[in-house]
Amino acid sequence: MTTIQNNKKGGSMIEILVVIAIIATTLTSLLGLISFSLKITTLTRQTSQANNIAKGIMEQVRNFRDGTNWNTDGLGTLITDTNYYVQKSGSPPKWQLFQGTKTINNFTQKVIFGDVMRNENDDIVISGGTNNPDTKKITATVSWEEKGTAHQIELVTYLTNWR
Image (cartoon, rainbow, N blue to C red; front, side, top):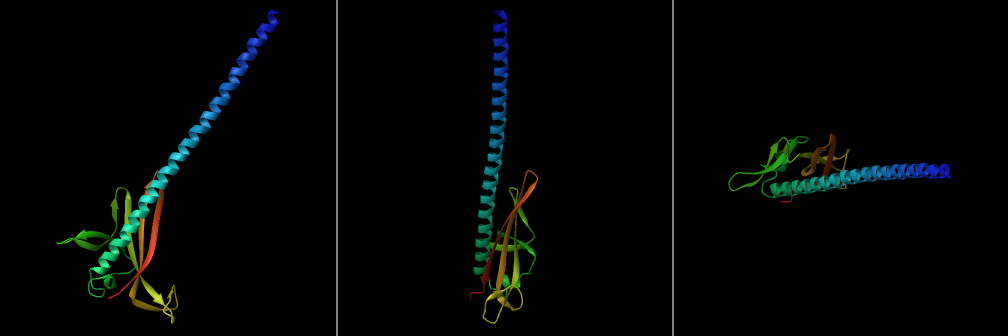
């Protein structure tokens, strides 16, 4: 009879070790899922923030256009395919464009202006049309780095010389 009791004690020990292994595996998987969830939440928050910054840049460029003369000191005078950033300046303060990029809180901002081509139907085309000096392609880009990985949001719109 003593032999049977000793085997039961050994069996209980194996059962306990199996339960501990199952719990450890479950906890490891759960911690991995929590870590992945936190990374996704952080990236989603940063992407939303970058998108809002890019929308703000577009609105600032519209305000710049509305406060200037297209061909004298406005969008018609800018160098195409060059990085600019928007900032309030002057007295009274108004939106101004400066060459280069601007970084605030790990988000690098830039806006690029491009020429626009139109076909005979006055539709915007990538190539094969004629340059329309009263329309500019505006590309607002916000980029950031998170844990060694580069991310970027880019918004594109077209603005015209509406005056």
